[in-house]
Image 1 (cartoon, helix red, strand yellow):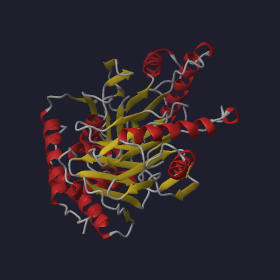
Image 2 (cartoon, chains in turn red, green):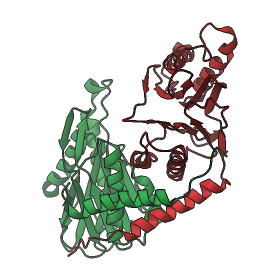
Image 3 (cartoon, one colour):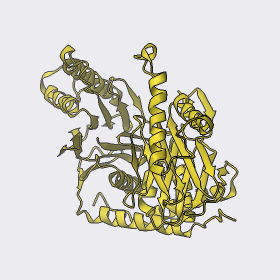
Length: 243
Length: 243
């Protein structure tokens, strides 16, 4: 499985992904699930992927390859909406190619999910969730974040903390805590975490962070959050159920 | 969906279940998912159920009906192991009856999951997870709890807090917080919560609690936990990602 989160805040964008891939429990590997396409000063596009690795890798490879020899590509689509549409179309193309008659009924899921986000000059930052079927939805102020993959363990803390007014630093803190909860409870999500923070309207070169098991800030958060939860838990009163 | 939890602690047993049943989002109803069978002074058996409501209701109805006219039933099986085996056998019987040729290929999932726990005189308290296939596993000191249904949202807090040495009061507090996280993030789990606490070796008459939206202790926990989390979150330092 996989766990990816993206947030669309007034301050900018956050993208984060784990890097564990597994087919069953005995084929575990590390793959980066974050892909960045950028024209500094003009556009930044980030893709996070979950699902069938053959599908998601093919989609990213084709999107990159076509930057030079296709009429429509990620560097000339005029809006993030058009970018999401192109990603969705490419997902459908790969699934149609790979899920052929020979493989039907073999129980293979060829689907891949993407979060696509970024900013193109003239637009505000935007993020989209592109489904395995190629259609897509956009985040709004009511729901300013998307998750794909093993999303449930780490959803409660995001629901409690994140609003469009959350700062990028707070969003990063919340995201790392959300990953910690997920990694503790689910073997199929693992370190390192790739995280990209983008300040709205900066169009600065992307500088993704790779957070490993020895990252001091992440380890401080893990310890501090765990101890804090236990303290809050201990302070809440008990009920006398047997009286 | 559903959310049920059971814990097997040195102090005794805890059972809790929500009461929302849904088929899609437009057929939502309230059904108790906790069934208690008891012979005060001799045995207490509690069933929690998740999955196809027709299957789980039939299993419970047959188990109750057969208390009077069958050779083997919940009141004469000599161990909790034998009780779990009887529940599993009944699950298989119902699925075999209902999932007939006519319904094959209609995409209906006839499966039902159960947590079966309790104490029979001469044994310690025990809990089992009975799968839709009728086989089952028992909780141990390494993993003293089971969840069925929408288990992921509320798993991190249990993983952090519960050990076999946890008291029943603390276990109840942790369980209600786990339900709160689940209910906030998933529409298919809803109040009221049925909760039964059983003190080991007491064989006292079961007195389940029904926790509604107006329960003062539950509301105090919801508020206190939410505020506590936000306080811990705010106290954890930020990282300067852009330096």
